[in-house]
Image (tube, rainbow, N blue to C red; front, side):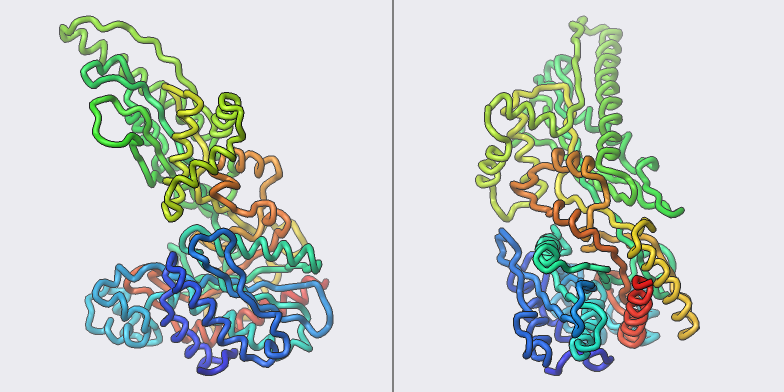
Length: 553
């Protein structure tokens, strides 16, 4: 087992060993073994032999699986507060999609050979035949990128005396699920900033290429997209199915709402001339237990909203508007069909008056506290303690909303709106701060250098289109927006511990420079080796040279 360094052979050998670690997200042993793998390969470097306190594990706070991040810190010889952060996630997704080769997928060389005799899509076959592509779980997303950052970091440790800034390397758990790893890292970084005054001048991630455009060219990303999970819990009016017109089906309200909201182009966010995917419904669920011949009262809709510029308040204002339209349409439909049935000759049914309201989750909390005389956090703690700690965070949040509705005595017709987990803020380059402006200039210089050196294009994208750990390196909205978000985020500070306060303290500009990779999470996940280990390291180092010069000007 060789020492990791900034050269093709050692990084390739490191990647193969790294991929053999089955660090599937949610497997505490696997994720911890990946952190331990990084520790074992870096702790033997001379710098860390001399400075053993500068390499450590950071346990994820309150994590039921006992997972940990890997951390290492190289201090410049000439004392400085300026610090560059390298981040990458150590977890991978399941290999279930690989079928009979699910175990072999952790052995990239053997797996690549197996692909030659396997029925795979035409584009993957073309890459396999062309050569230079390595297949396997994690080779692209994102162990090759993290390997490159580790190799550069190792080189920095060998030259600590001449460095112009400090370097912090973080191997993070749980990126593919809830982001608990980066949450812990953000809290740790905020503590380092407070205790030692460190100035985190930029964060470099190395996620693989992800774009609907040409995938075979190198690409730099200046920010990352955000993801919100707004919900709308529709409360109808219960009635026996034999007395249909005395109630309103909660599913009817939900159906009208979803017809308005699903794929609505008005929810497609735009940034710097690029339009991103509109929202979609990921869950539509009736909430009662078991079979019943009563009209469903409570039905919840959960949406995935990708955002770049939209604020939490704008997102919920949209759903408040559509929920009111949905309520009106549901009521009008019930009345219309009642009248049509009467026209057919049915016995005249009594006219029913319907009162309705759209409520924010924060309003529901206020009612609960007034009715019970207790803090809602105390009630939430009791509810969550009664649930399986390994249960899905959204299901846990829905259980809490249901309990609050019961305690508050809320009945139909209502739609309650708010946010469930996950909520990942977008992170973009606003061209406002000196560091942001220096980053833009440096990327332009890297592009010119790259295209002159390699005779190939280097694309620059404003936003990384996959959810990434870069989201957590700052909260770019106002304090008012943060207060609005947290007051409408189900389970905040009781089941969801996203460190928004620490995020606001950090505000670190981010950039993603990662490998040319394809088919992340699929059976044909692969990475282009000549770029990732021959070109990318030099590209990242060149960026750093430009950036450090530019922030001094």
